[in-house]
Amino acid sequence: MRTALILLFLLAVAAIPGSVLPQRNINIENVNRYAVEHPDLFPVLDRIGGFDVYASPWFSAIYVLLFTSLVGCIVPRLRDHVRALRAAPPPAPKRLDRLPQHAVLTDSDGDLAAIAAVLRKRRWRVVVRDDTVSAEKGFLKETGNLLFHFSLIGVLLGVGLGSWYGWHGNRLLVAGPDNAFCNNLQQYAESKLGHQVDGSDLPPFCLELTDFHAAFLPTGQPESFRATTLVEEDGAAPRRESFSVNDPLRLDGASVYLLGHGYAPILRYTDRNGEAQESDDAFLTIDGNLTSEGVAAFPDVNLDPATGARNPDLQVAFEGLYFPTTPDSPPFVRSTYPAERSPGVMLFAYRGNLGLDAGVPGSVYRLDQRQVSSGRLKQIGEGKLLRPGEKWTLDDGTSVEFLGTRKYITISVRYDPGERIVLISSVLLLVGLMPSLFGRRRRVWFRISPVPPDGVSPADPLSPAPAGATTTSRSSLVEVGGLPRTEYAGFADEFDRLVAATRPEGGRPDGARDDGAPEDGAPEDGARDDGTHPGRARSGGATEEGTD
View 1 (cartoon, rainbow, N blue to C red):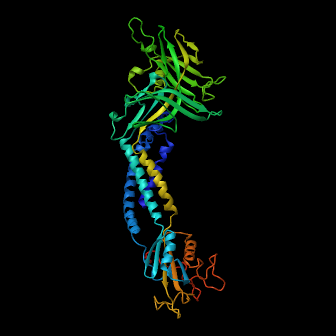
View 2 (spheres, rainbow, N blue to C red):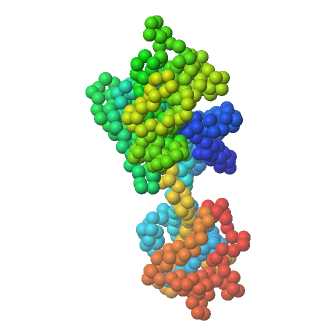
View 3 (cartoon, helix red, strand yellow):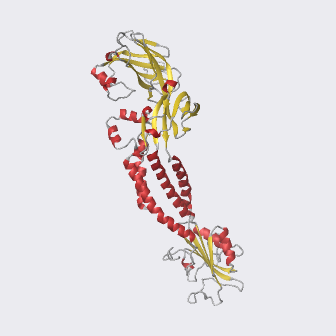
């Protein structure tokens, strides 16, 4: 068990980077932003799996070892627990006065059936043997303990099943039929397949974002989000579905989760030949007020009218900042509110070779700064703030017009076959935790024997009867002992109540008061004339093994 606890602690420590660092399977945008903000640290963390913690080899090794350790721990305990459940309560020990709790009843009628009935009414497991009654209670503690550990194994199995047969992909979906998305690997910005999954296993469906509604408080804090999409599954008729952050879209074989949202400015560029092209590329949000930055690139403009050939040095791009609510006065660097109350876009024009034909991978949200530094891509004049419908004419007569915006959402499409197993196991884990923490296993014994007037116990002629044991012609001596199997501070009170309930009058043990102290002039339960107290816990008392 110690090994399992150490491994569980290591698993908790290993999960910390997954909470501190952005994870690819949750939000690829935050990972990309981290790479830009920490260019030196990012490659090191990425090499050791810091941005994909829960699928990294070292994390997997820890939970596989934990799984093995738990199985080796609970299988023997389960066997012992089943054996204990099937076994009868053990016989009474010879010396009940050596148990931690002890009492003597001298006015009992010696009715074993009545004592057993009282115990059964209080949900004790009872066995009557000759002149003794053995009772045991508290097996729910070990049952809850085993349920907790089996549930923990279920959680590990669910995580492993999802790692092998699950998959996920993230992408940005702009509103409009031209930006519809169909489920295949090529259309994901980032994807990860389980070890037993390939691209042909993905379920066929298509999504089109038709509307997105976002509500904000006056302070700018988000209140609610809801996306409305047109869904087409496996050739069926399209249907309209909506989903939100905590209410994912459930499809056959996949679930679509809403991660974020933003705006895509619509820019129309008219080149030297009068040809116009539009761009609705998404701008990524950079703060809570949805200030966004991005690039609108036009590589296929200013073509040669005679040959239709493209001149790489005449390519155009606009780097810009979009403000849902534009500040009333400069500097125009941040939006003042996340909703579109006064939209505007700050554009910086560039002309030259965009470097798209070099075959070097780069970000679609930023210009290639190597092209700018080398002079192959040059900025044209100063920046220009455009409102919807406004046009900016450049130095060569070409122009760019800000037409408005389209909303976009960031979605994560996921399939995890172990998700339900993890959920059920987590619930059972909590259910098992309660009795394992608060359950208490304990045993009590009642021994009944008549005591002759000379005060010598017939069960053991060499031992005197318990102190204070006197009987009448109609009564028998009842000796009671109790043993908690675990630490249980309240067992003494429970024992006193149990003993009182077994008396014919429902009273208290001889010489006992409500406050637990002896009556005036009466010895404490089981007290000897020499002042010792054999009926209470004392040094050298019997252990659990000595009473079975």
